[in-house]
Length: 312
Image (cartoon, rainbow, N blue to C red; front, side, top):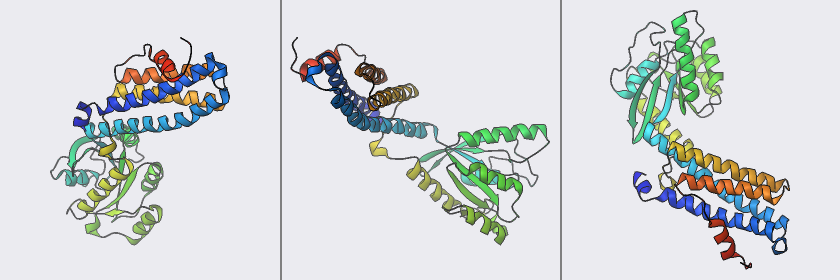
């Protein structure tokens, strides 16, 4: 991907989009200045048809930029659960070293602990969080707040249960809290035996399967790694061949261009004046230019006179 960036693939794709956007803008401008050349309905339909295609390409660039960030910073992965389910033990098992302090005392972890691992070629930023539960302890409350923030910011959540114990109200609450997140449900302490009621409850709620493991013995860790890779490849779109790297500034400009193009399409669909549509298209064209260090000059006039037979 770095080689693709050096070769200028990102810039080439943006220029290609700009070229089609410029042609669309020229069509609209000609209709404004020379109404006999076209009719407004045709120009608006052109904006909707071509705009839809260009939006898809801009979306792909934005998604690719997200992939570039993943490759640089790692997939933010939060390990969450109530106290004493084995979150820190799971972190240590994934790292294959004793990074986090592990005790039988609930609430040992009071803050978010971050570590990076390379999981079969994909970087993960693992966050071992404090156990989430209702508590009167002021320090633990701060840890719970930080855990929830890490969970909200994560691209992937490992929701950990203790399979050897009955489920608690805190377990129920976490299940509801993470239901709409991209998550993998992990049942730990399988070496101690998994309770049937716990297993039945969890599997009844999780349609995509559960990973059973023992962070203590290492049993099931490979299965968890397989599941993590599957989720990342399928849901975080690890498509290297169709990807381009972009920095934060470029991504922001792509978002602005997308907003402007969407605005032009909304105006066209609503039957707004062509002047309003033209302004939005011009702004989208400019934003894409800023993303690759190119500014709009006389491009529009050149495009109009090269495409349309008009008096100069």
